[in-house]
Length: 159
Length: 169
Image 1 (tube, rainbow over the protein chains, first blue to last red):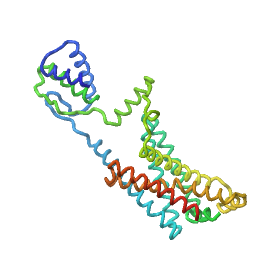
Image 2: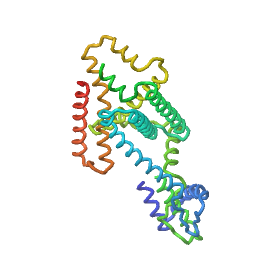
Image 3: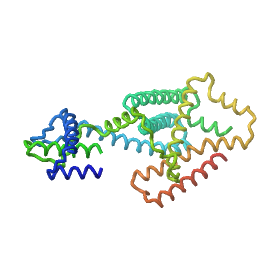
Image 4: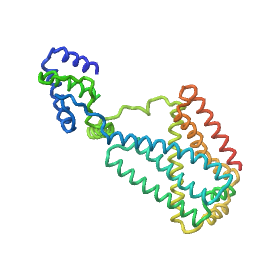
């Protein structure tokens, strides 16, 4: 790192150690080839490529997702005493939805941390989506055809 | 690092060609996103089969570290448990009360039952209380190191107390 800054000051001052500047030039060429693909990149005119609208909308979506995760956590927190104090079918289905979505987003974060590479990420996310869908369906089935989530916990604790 | 290289390289290129009159040292035209750069890093390093420096195997464990990974561990465990329950509800032929009666008919001692209830309640309680701690951090509160440790100890104490009370119910 320090050596690069040193080299850059050399180039600015116009001293051209031949070897060093060759590597500079070749790297510069490589960088320039890549950047040719970006529209609005003109060395001479000095137009500057700013963050594209696509990137901005990506980070807006990510920000909304983050907020949604926190809101859901708070909602789920409220459901815990509610399920104990006034169990009902409404709470059963709400709990099923909130629990599965919270788990789905949580596992999604774990994946983002540990799985790398576009293909692997896509595969893992598809797998988790499948699991979460099946989980939600299974919990709704349980709520409809069986005793329901709130009652189930009560019954389990009475063993 | 790559950014610095490119910026420096561009300067070198710029200065070596006299026809470019405009010097824009501080402009940062990025050709790739952070995500693309990260993927390139992983692809290159796995392809070259480079060894990874020891990190979690040598770093001294701290309470915040332990609590953080436990939050993740309990989260994954609870999520798996719920999914297992949901899939069992779809697959198993009999109803929930039938299987409860089955467990009830097995002669487990009261200590074993109390311990099982504790074992079920503990991850739920821990994840819930530590989750509240996380939400406080998301509001920007409690980042000072003594505060981190204090809130951590409170979470563990609350977890143990809650799990014991729930197991006694």
